[in-house]
Length: 572
Image (cartoon, rainbow, N blue to C red; front, top):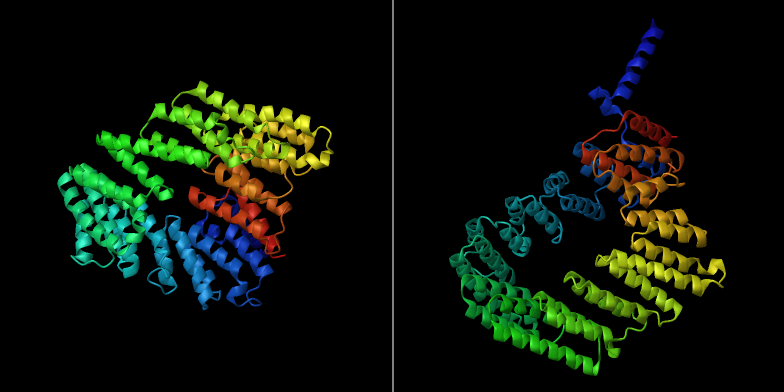
């Protein structure tokens, strides 16, 4: 009778394990986090490593469980760890910040309360919470947190008020309740008032836009008095005021501010470029033709003066970008022509110079001037071929990548194919081992252009080591997931490539996703050490945990059996 009972119990357990129908039993089954914890217990017994400085992998496990499993379970693990030190509390705070930054500020706040904190411990950490709540359209939650810390409130409140885009009156009430008529943080309060004015502008309310733009202007004057030497650093605030006044009907005040900003900008530098672009757009949109034309003439004269004394392609590119902001197509073509054919603008072996020139071609392609752009592209390529082989190779690789960046895939493929002819000619008498790096670069050019077939052909013919990894990487970069997966499953170990595949193949619950999860678990049984700390293996398991959580699914029967084997082996 006793034997029958034991046999019957075994049958019940097996049926429950395989079917997953019993919730009570399912709760006792190990999951991916159980495997990691058992691995760590084997590699880093807490009895032998009682202090925080030896428990980093456990704290990482705690964060993963907290984020993607059960907070109660995370708390149970935390009670086993040493979090009494300042360093441990900092680590836990970072975990909370990370949780908030991944879109879960409420969960992060619950966790902070569990470790005895009511707010983030660092000033910069507030940003994750505020941004996440704003993204969730819960600015009131962000405001509640900010009210716990005056410095954080003063700094981050502009973003919160901006989030009351549809209810500007509510933003006004919040501002008045906190500051009234007091000026505590002029720079930040300036941006709060600008946010309120912008909210009214978006709602088509010129009257209130003007009221709060005037208030912001008064605050701005106060700010500039204290920071006169850094006036140009406030170019964004200048431009916001200019555009708000323009909308509210006070274009004369906008014009006065634009002239002030021009004086503050000087005649060169990054801030000058940014300010100039905004002012030109304002002049162009509001019919200030005389001012607009004068600014164009001045900008061209400045660039030509630079050309006369020290020609720099980047200066020409800046002018082209400026002209593009207001769609000055005719002038753009003139400046591109000068950039392409002037001997003073020759690039020699400067790859950045070639990239600037390719950038300029994009303006032509976007304006459907393909024939002209192709003509200049040929000039650029011919110029690059005047260099010695090594600098030519660097430059050509850069040009191919830049062509891909601006969406000219066909041109990039053609250039890679033309480059292959030069490679074969230049390297034909070199020992094969010495030129493997060169052919990898050629394969990478093909890969940039999405031609992985040609890249594989080059690697198979000219490279003897790490071909599979390199080709898989090219498939991944080109988002050819099926091809990449076909190679990864033939590999001898799991790497970061498999993590990338899991993240992308399992964006949704598909048969391919389930197959790859199963493959990953099997691979961990046969190819990865699971009785040591094994940080890389842990990352694979953590990624599986994220997938199960984000897709709201549980392991299949086969996957659960594999997890059980991993769990059993981890205790060996």
